[in-house]
Length: 450
Image 1 (tube, one colour):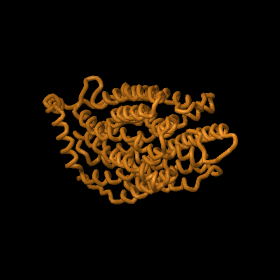
Image 2 (cartoon, rainbow, N blue to C red):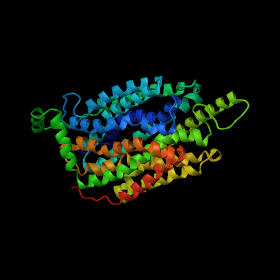
Image 3 (cartoon, one colour):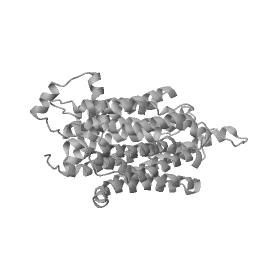
Image 4 (cartoon, helix red, strand yellow):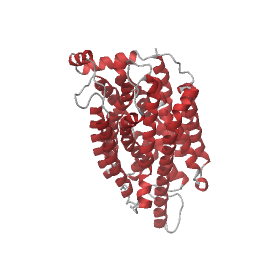
C-alpha cells in the first residue's frame, strides 16, 4: 500500500513538468511561424511537423518499456530518463532558432520532439508509481497546473522580450527574429533547471527483492522488448481502448490549432504575411512589403500572448479540476471541458481586426480543455493498468496521440490547399469540430478496468 504524499511532495515531483512545458510551449507557439519565416507555404506546414510524431510513435513505448525495467541505485527508475531527455532537449532548443534552412529546422524539431518525449512519458508513469489511486487525480492535475504555469511564460516570451526589453522582432528574409531566438535560449535553461529540481528533490520507491531479482534475470534484446510491447497492445484493458478513441480525435484537433492558429492570426486577422507579399497593388511597393511583414510579426506575437492567456486559464482551472471530478466524475468533467474547447476554436470564425480581444476568449476555452486533456485521461487510465507495466502502457497510450498527428500531417495539407484554399482560420475550426466529437465519445467510457 503506497503512503499518501503531502502537497509539498506532490509539488516537488511535478515541477519538472514545468520545464518540459517550456520546450513544448515554445515549439507549439512558434514552429509554424518559424517555418513560414524560412519560406514554407501553408499547405506544407503539416508535413513539416511529420518527423516529430513518427519518432514519438517509436520512442514513447520503448522508453516506457525500458523505464519499467530500469533501476539505478542513485537515480531510480524514471529519473534517468527525465535527466537524459532534458539534456538533449536543452541542446536542441539552443540550436533550433539558428536554423539557416527549412530542412534543418524540420530536422531539429524531430530531435527536440524525441528528446522531450524521453523526459515526458516517464513523468506520467511517475505519478502512478508514487501516489495511491485516490491521489492520482490530484497528481495529474498538479502536472496540469505546472504545465500551465510554464506555458504562461514560455508562450509570451517573444512578446515580452520585444515590448518590455526592446529586443528586435524584425528580421531579414529567411531569418528568424532575434526575440524568438532569445526565447528559445531561455527555454533551454528553464527546461534543464526545473527537471533537475525534481530529480534532486524526489526519491522513488525501491523495488522489492523479488523485483530486483526479476530485473537481474530479465530477458533482454530488441526482439523480446518488441514482443512485450505487442503483447501489451493486444491485452489493453477495455477502458484504455475507449479512452484511446477519445484521444485519437482530441489530439488532431489540437494539432490543427498548433499548425495554423499562430499564422492564421498573422495572415488573416492582422492581414500580414511572413514574406511581405500582398495581393494589393500599390505605388510604394517596398513600404507595403515592410508593412505586411510588420503586421504578420505583430499578429504572431499577439497569438503568443493569447497562448499565454490560455495557459493562465489552464493553470487556474487545474485547481478546480479535482473538485469537478469529485462532483461530476472524471468522465463527465472531461466531456464538458472538451466541449468548451471545441466551441472556443469554432468561434475564431467571428474574430477580425476590430474584435481582436475576442481571441482571449477563444484561447480561454482551449485552456479549459487543455487542463483536462493533460490530466483526466491519464487519471482514468492509471486505475486500470497493471502496476508492473504502467510505463509501457503509458507509452502505448501515446500511439493514439501521434497516429492522428501523422495522419493529419500526411493528408491535411492537400485538404487545406484544395478544399480550404489555404485559409488557416478554417484549419483551426476543423480542430474545434474534432474536439466536439471527442467530447461526445467520452460519454461511452465505462468504469470497468478490464
